Amino acid sequence: MKNVIPGEIYAIPLFLADIIDMTRITLKDLRGDDKKFVYFRIIEDRGVGGILIEVFNKVGTLDISIEEVVESMRLFPPIIITTLSIRKGRWRRIGKQENYNKEQDSMYSDITLVSGAEGHYFLWKGGHSLGQIPDETIEPHEQWFYWRAHHLEERIIKALTDEGISF
Image 1: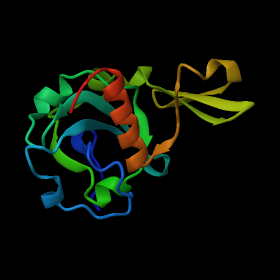
Image 2 (image 1 turned 90 degrees about the vertical axis):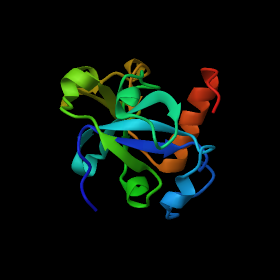
Image 3 (image 1 turned 60 degrees about the vertical axis):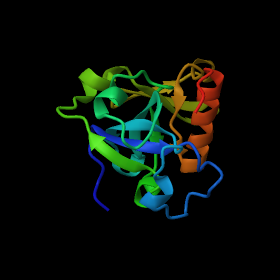
Image 4 (image 1 turned 120 degrees about the vertical axis):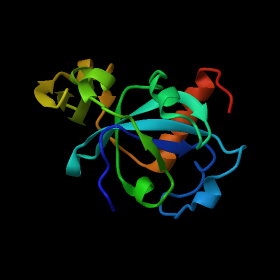
C-alpha cells in the first residue's frame, strides 16, 4: 500500500459502523446520493505510532470539494488511527489539500495526546514528549489510542447526534 501523505482527505462512511473492520469494501458499496460521510485529513504518519488525523464536522457525499471540507471545524481533537480501513477500502481518499502545512492548517504545536496507564501517564504535544504528568491532569487531553473503523465511526455518529446534526 502507498503511504498516506499529510494533507490527504479521506471520507468515512456513516453507514458501515456495524460491519467489521476486516471486510473489504468496494467503491460500488460507497456510491449513491443516500450514502453520507464525514471527512478527515492526514496530519502526520507516525509510522508504528499510527497516523495522526483530524476529523471534520462536515457531512456530505464522496463528491464534496476539498475546500468545503477543510473550511469546516473539527468534530473533536486530533486522534491516532491505524491504516487498516484505508487498506481495506472502507475509508476512501477523495483528494489532497494543496500546500498543506501541518502547523498553519492543523495547529500541530497545540495538539496534545496522553499515553500510558494509571500512575504512569505521559503527555505528547506537537511532536514532542513532555514527560510524565499526574493522573488528575489527563482529562482535557485526547488519549493516544489506535482508533479502528467501527469504534471511530460509532464515536463520530455519537458526536454528530449530540450536536443535533442529522445525516
